[in-house]
Length: 568
Image 1 (cartoon, rainbow, N blue to C red):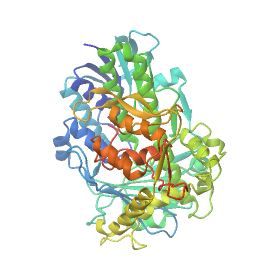
Image 2: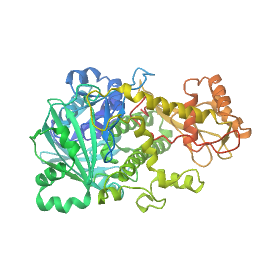
Image 3: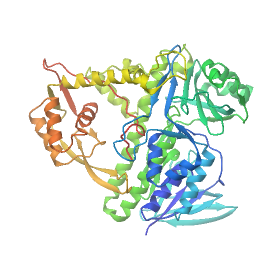
Image 4: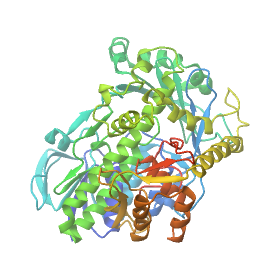
């Protein structure tokens, strides 16, 4: 049995340890703090809840009485009606969740850490890891400091989930800060009962104003977490007048946030964090894996931090288990972990950039919003972003305009737009149905107009790709569709039958309905249209109508952790 050292006892570390134990591995976890300890990042996604329930924590989470989060609501843009990003979804599998939770992290994190201990993980709190040796091919070593006593411990594998201050990342000089999301956050807590009792009860709020935006998260005990996000250039002002005065004066500028607070009193200290948006050049190699905030963080707008931590933790644990059993696959497993992690990070990066761009056209002119607008195809802040390069390629083919990037967000916003300018307790999910039906109808018309589908490239390839089994958490080797240019669709694993369909299509184009029929005959009736849509979005298929004109389906921003499709 291989032994893995996990550094860090937050969600990434604890979930990695729990998953490793589920897979039969020996685990030792080292955490420099003594729990409970404070952390920000209280708002979760449905995908995180699903993962935790499948790991056997559903009953404990229910008993903890965390606030149920049915949606995220945005007052996004001056004079714009609210819109709600609902988590309601069809339950196509028993692990799909139609809600998330809002948690007190000191309680939530301790619950996860105690669960790891109960599962047989050797947990050491109050133990700092000073350095990690990861250059060997046959194991790792960490130098520990517990109450001033140092020792070195060796193991077979290492998961670094030690957060933004990771000593391993400093050793490797592996971090690159983002030039686009240059913000700082200032926050505190208010005593305030949730003012809504209907469909908005438990929702989070993200509210724009001239200098940035405000988060509002309802927690149990009638508490609201309230933070302001502003540009890093405000750091000098913050330092001059102090965090408390800066926070109160800045928050007061956001009238819609003040209305929700309704005169509530702040009862906790004001906290500040800067330089949070970063990524790593390398997420794993040899015998180590970076997870959660050790690896990367984008921005708090869509509450994806804990989900990315949980997803990476499960993937790392599953990869380690497969490495132990199939050592000849080590290189392929690291390639999968690095590429899939980066693709997920890029997905969030693109999603957020679109929403910032949308708001930048609706808010009064300010430094914050000017800096968060994408309107040029040569934006040097995004030189290394794969998603931005793809948009540039599409712009060169004249089937996408970077100047219209904001429209990718506006489509989603339109689907969730409230019929009233003000927040109302009479709001219900049913009010969003007409817009949803219009969107589905428009998409269906676009798809049915496709009379010819052509494969992009010369080759239709079946490429190996690893998938985490949703029940067992074992890593399984599957195959996905790709071409010779590196484009691929990983969401759906496919086999020889589907490959044959698209190989024939590459030789002789067919229409959308014919492709659907053939996929249905191959046993993919439920997912046939989604497979086609994903291939179109990835640029693996080109579509044309009866007159030979290019058919472009509605651009859809993908966001893992919600809906009925989870990567893990």
